[in-house]
Image (cartoon, rainbow, N blue to C red; front, side, top):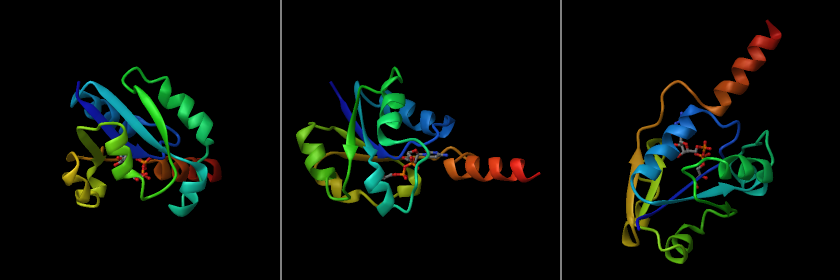
Length: 132
Ligand code: C2G
């Protein structure tokens, strides 16, 4: 039973997010997502469109997401890896190297980001479309 952990804001869910979660789940049997709280997002200079509760409900509806836990600090990853008995920590490679400190506790894999999509691109494209 391989247990996988990843983190993110997952706002305005798009195919880049789904590609990441799908590939993460394919690495094991149980996928846990640490979902950034609205408070934590402030620290990431992100203002999510959907609230934490709504983003959580959306993620929980994805068949290959097994569990969603709150991410409310940069410093919870080691505790989460230990507490949830994680075998593999996965992030998109825009985070390449940033979480190598976790290699003491579990395998760390950075997966290639999906090119051409992001939540900020969606927001910008909608703004341009609206302004004509
Ligand atoms: N992602 C991706 N391809 C995209 C967009 C996002 O693979 N086109 C991946 C990111 O690399 C990340 C995950 O999808 O692994 C979630 O992305 P965000 O919601 O933007 O999360 P982020 O703000 O990067 O938060 O502690 C870690 C942070 O909470 C990560």
